Amino acid sequence: MEALKIHKVVERDGEITITGLPVKQGQKVEMILLTNSHMESASHSCLTAKRLLHSGLIGMWKDRDDVGDGTTYARKLREEAQNRSGGR
Image 1 (cartoon, rainbow, N blue to C red):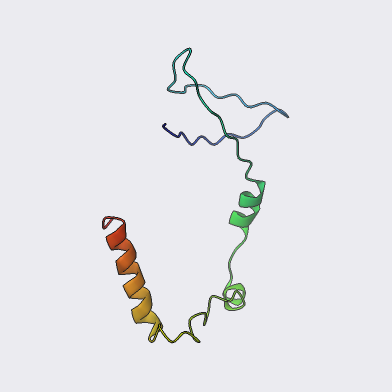
Image 2: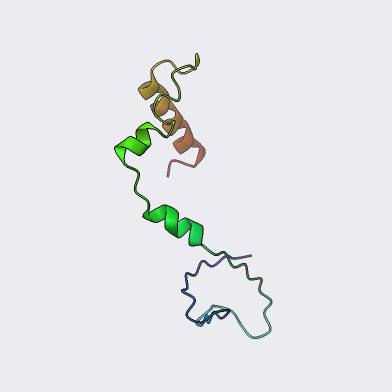
């Protein structure tokens, strides 16, 4: 199964027109529509330094015994993730 990601803006209530799809007459397809009103509002919000400071991300590893130096630990995690994904 191949997935196609197409972004459309609904111009008329309850209607979406999609053309130019790489499908043939009689071919069966499955459509999943995801509305992104929540994603749009989240993408427009700006993460300021103050919001980042109060987000819980800063200092999140401070009480962990297995972390040690946060910078070294983060570098190790990044390297492990790159090796798992084939070094992309």
